[in-house]
Structures are given as C-alpha cells and as structure tokens.
Amino acid sequence: MADISERLDAAGDEWRSYDEFAAGIDAYRLPPLDLAGRRLELALDDGGSLTVDFGDGGSAHWSWSQPGVTGASPGTDPYDAVQVRPGVVFVNLELTSRESEAVTLVWSTATNRALVAHSRIRSVKESAADGEPRVTQSFRAAVLTATESGPASAPRGDAPAPSRDLIGRRNVYRYSPDHLYEHTYMSSERYMWQCLQGVQRGHGDVDRSTVWRFDQGLYLFCFREFKIAVASVWLHDLGYELRTTGVFLGLTAEGRAEHSRAGGHIYPLGAVVYPDVQPV
Image 1 (cartoon, one colour):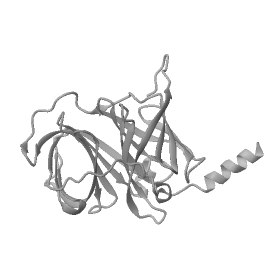
Image 2 (cartoon, helix red, strand yellow):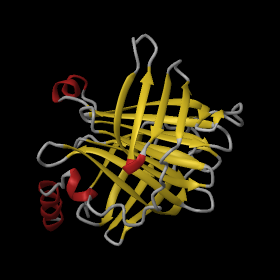
Image 3 (cartoon, one colour):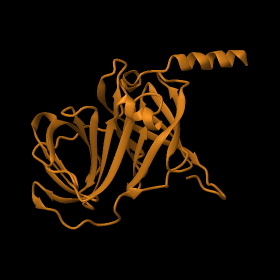
C-alpha cells in the first residue's frame, strides 16, 4: 500500500504541461483541407453573424457581429480545416490577432447547418473569482446563409443542440503511437479521463465538458481542464468511421498561449444505462 501511495504522489508531482502532452497528438489526424477562395456566411442563433473569407497560405479574414455590440470584430488569422465527412467541414480559427482565443466552426453543405464554439483563456483573477477552470467556452448554433457561389438554400434537418447522448459511454482514443486516452462521459457537465499511454500515463481527472449533437452520429465534445489552462474542441464521428478531429488552446509551461491540432481513432468500450435517477 505504501508503494502505491508513493507512486501516486510522484505522478502528481510530475503533472505535465499542456505543450508536453500535446506534442505529436496529431499523428493520426485526418489530412488538412485547403479552403483558399471559399467564403462562408453564417447567421447565428443569438442574432449575430459570422463571415469568413479563406485566403491563400492558410489564412482567413473573419468578421463577427454580435447583438448589442456596435460594429463587427474583424481579424485575419491562421486557420486549419479538415473534411470529417463528405460535405462536413471542421475549421479552427487560431485567433493570433487576439489574446488567448480561438473560434471553431463545423458546417454541413448537405443540411446548411453550422455550429460555432468560442474558446478563451481567462485571466487568473477571473478564474479565481468563481472557482471555475481558467478556460471558458461558449456555443452557438447557426445556419449557412451564403458561400462564394451565392445565397444558400434553407437549412434542413434538426438544428445542432446540447445533447445527453454520450452520458454513460466509455471510449478509448488513439491519437498517435504514443497517445492513448480513456474517456468516460459522466453527465451533461463533466467527463472523466485517464492517460493509458504517453507522457501523462497514470494521470487522470474529472473536468468540465459540453456535448452538442451536430448530425446523425456527429457530436461536438468540448472540455475545460481545472488543473492546467487548456480548452479543447473535438468533433467525434461515432458512425461508421469512428474518427475524431480536434484542437487545443492552452498555456505552455512558459505561460504563452498556444494552439495545437489533434485527431485519431475511437474505440468504444461500452456504456452504462442508469435505471432510476439520471445524472445532471
């Protein structure tokens, strides 16, 4: 028993920084997609709008108008895009023009539906005031209103929405030959993880999480860690492909905001069904 306690204490002392565990976590990611020359116009469910013009060299010019805010917030920043299914694209705007922010988009040309996630690293003072993680995320459903070809047709199917579908599921995620993690989805607010292989081996925690259903078998899964300042956005394809595509925004060991890309394979381990009282 003493030996186990000593090893657990040692693991706690060696908690890895964001940049240490994120290194190489994109080895099994789907190939990048070049969107140069494409245009995206979204109407957000809060009454705002988001326009993105994708340029050459992996950069995009964007403009976001928000209700009650005078003028749109423009910027030109690097982007990363992946086609996760035919007609479904995952894009991350690495907002280097702003301090410690990222905007992640998912859209479908089959349904003209979209989903927008905004991640931000808060100041130490902000997070200490409410006891929540230092990172925060907000989510908005949207519809595609226009592209470079002109106005888009009316959206089809259900709008993206918060989902409880993953509660009780337990999956293993292989991101590289050296990155293997297990997730258990505990409730609508929290998930549990542990590292089975990699620099975080032996470490695990229960962190804040959010799940939105985007389409049949497609779920946006996002988490916000307590122990270190890191937020992550993933699109899980739990259909036939069993693939996941994701991004991180976090603070390095030197305290510098950094964006990282990730992705890999999903291996379902099973699920539990609660017979009576359900999790929150």
